[in-house]
Amino acid sequence: MGLDNIPHRHPCEAGGTAVRAPEGGVDCRAAQQAGGCPWVNTRLGEGAVYGPLGTDCRWRGEVGHRIVLTSEAAGAEPPGDLWCDVYGRNGRLTPEYCIALAEWPEEHGELYLSLVEPEEREKEAKTYRHMVRWLRWVAEHCDGADARF
Image 1 (cartoon, rainbow, N blue to C red):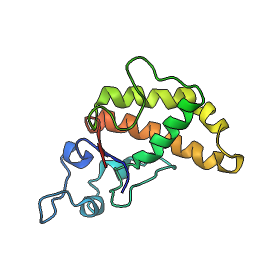
Image 2 (cartoon, one colour):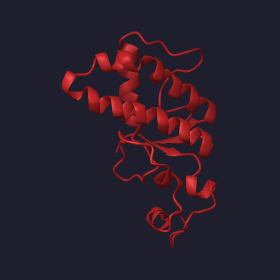
Image 3 (spheres, rainbow, N blue to C red):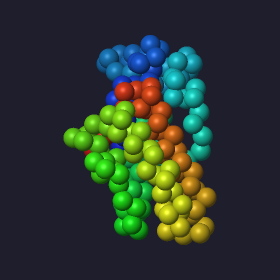
């Protein structure tokens, strides 16, 4: 298993629409079927890469990690005290960290895409744009995110 980024607080819990599974966790499919999944209802567009065991609001962080490392290797420097990775600080990505991390690929997206094989650029553009949308969304609606390994 690799790195997944998950909302610090499930969006359905934050929005008061969570459906509980018998074991006490969130039953994502039931919440979606009831129309209570804010993530699914938002529809952030193409480019999502989900983890193998993740729910729809989780994001495959190792994809973002690859985007960041590739851009840094090409000379894109992280701003200030942000070390531009999807692991956050001790596995926690605060809302402020998520926003700062979202701004960085927005600024360096063209550099990243110039390093991708031409036949992969359209797909990769959707992926890195989704990364930006996901980071902004969890910052606003979920109190940021957590990194799970």
